Every structure is written in structure tokens, then in C-alpha cells.
Image (tube, rainbow, N blue to C red):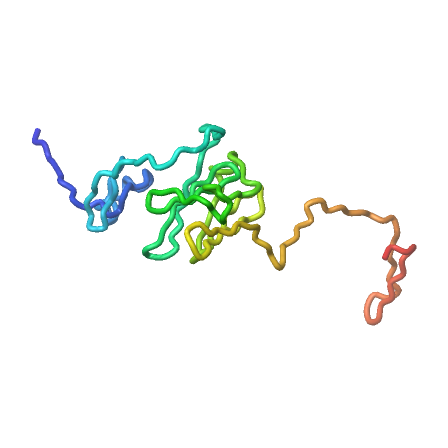
Length: 198
């Protein structure tokens, strides 16, 4: 039996979802891979090895590695981007491989994030617009993080809402024993209650 070798030079679709593996009729199938590990797909179609990691910072001795961290990219402009590293109650700011110190003139290399626990890190979500990052989690009020005039100026606060939707989670109902009797079936109708229900 003859061996057939197909050379693929284009991976612009990245990894294909297992549910699409039988869809040989779509172009994404021809430009995808079943598994890509430790590589970066280039816009031109090829792949290259993922760059190595660099040790740039060590958390203080009180930090427990089991508590975890969450890295969030923050792009202020085309030439000014950061990596925000969240731990329980803290946010470290990293720029160009260096941890920014003296955040907000506090002498610390972190900003305090009240209410953010290590258990929340895996489930927190965020979105960014210009100089503002909004961090959300179901268990805390949304947090607004705003970059100031310098790399060390960051304002952290709770997002306030003008109109908060209300839902009656503990709705209580009552069934009064009175009756309401109409005096007519049509036209002008007067309702008479057996006692002061309203």
C-alpha cells in the first residue's frame, strides 16, 4: 500500500474544535490543526515556537502559591501596554518586564483591591476601554481600575450605578379573606369590598 503524505503550510484557523473535525467541506478545516502546543500561529499562516518565560518578580514570603494569580493584559495605547497581576486583594503592575513600584505614592509595588479573594481569581472577568479596566465577579461589586498620568498612578474604586435593576427575591404574598362584589355587569360598575382590603 502506498503511503500518502500531505504537507500543510497554513494554520491560520488555529486549533479546530473537535465538533468540526468531520467538516472537510469548509476552508477552516483545510487551514486548521487538531492540536497546537507551545506554538504561536502567525498571521501569514505558519507557526513558530512560543517564546520562553522570563522570571521578573517574586511575590513576598506571605504569599501562598496555592492562592493563585490572574494575569490581565492592559493596553493603554499602541506603544504603552501593561500586564496586571492580580492576587488576593492586590494588583501588581508590570510594564516592559519590570514591576512598577511606589504605586500611587504608597511605597508599595501593588494597589489594594478590596474584596477580591483568591477563590474569585479563576472566575473573574474583565473588559477594557481606553484607560479604564472593569473587573467583575458575581460575589463582589464591579471594580473600576483607571490608569492615571504616570505608570505608577492607578485609581481603584467600585463602579456605581445610577439605576440598579430590582428583583423581588423575597416576594411575599397574602390572601385576604374579603370579597369584592360588583353592582352591575356592564356600563358603570361599582365594586364593594366586604372589608378594607385596599
